[in-house]
Every structure is written in structure tokens, then in C-alpha cells.
Length: 205
Figure (cartoon, rainbow, N blue to C red):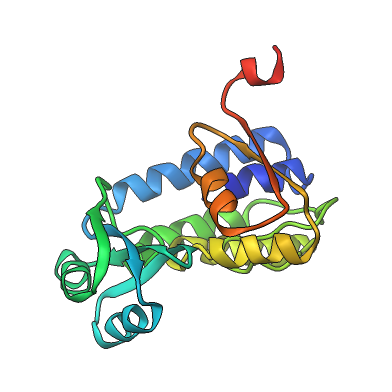
């Protein structure tokens, strides 16, 4: 996600100008990759969900947000097939332009990978947890490889929260509009205090 680019900048992997250009390129490529659908499902049996996804071609779990919430991504037919068969509390189609974080983004991911090849990644000054691999990493080469595969693979936020808890992190600051991630942390973890920074006013500026 764009948040991972911000994290890499904050860890000194590249400068601000590079980060902004990568955000722009990635956003444009994703916007151009039309087709596909995404649906959020809540309150389900994970075993049933995984069985349906594995048995249905053209759909993947794009965002593993928590034990009770995931987002499906893929062809409209495949996404609808899984969400309509799954016994769940709610299934909400998302207003998106494409099947993000799925193999449907392969063309955009290849173009973004070509852009990344031209960018130098320094080693991170602090460990970064990536969407594709929520384990601490500082190697610039490894972080670039993770970012390269991010557009076609799922966001493992549930495991990221587990990794933060295991590392003894006590405070999480969500930077950007809204508080979706803070809400997931509050409902899914214990001992982590949340804060949000959405505007300059939140910084006292």
C-alpha cells in the first residue's frame, strides 16, 4: 500500500522526492488496471472461507484484516460466487476500479517493478514490516523485493498485528485519513495504545 512507501521513507530507504514519485507511479498504474471486483466479508468461519477460495478460480484473499474481516479480490463472477456461498454476517461490495492485491494486477506490477529497478534502496534504519511479509526487515534489497510483489499479493494485516504484539510494541500511530487500522488494532490486540495523525492540526501545527 501507499502506507508502506511512507514507512520506507521514514526508515531512510529513499528520500522524499523518490517516495512521492513512486506513490504517483504506483497510483497511476493501479488506476489504469481496470476490471475485477473486491468485496469485504465479516463474521465468517475461516476454514469455510479458505475452502471456498481454494475451490474457486479467479479469487483471492486480498486483505486479511483480522480474524473476523477479510477482503476478497478477483473477477466479479468469482468474488460474487464466494461471497454469496459463504455463511457470514455481512458481505459488502467495495467501490473500487480493479481487483487490487490479486494476480489481476500482474501487468501493473510488472510496470512498477521496472520503475523500482531504477531506484536505489538503502538499508532501513529501523525494521519495517511489509504487507507481503510481516516480519522485521532492514535490507534494502529485500524491502525492494517485497514492494515489487505487493501489488499482486494479499495484505497480511492480521499477522502484522500479531507481529507487533510479539515484539512488545505498546503504541501504534496511524498516519492518514480515518482510523480503520487503529480500530482493527483495538479490537484484535491487547496492550497497544492507538493514536491518529490525519492532518497537520493533529501535530499541533
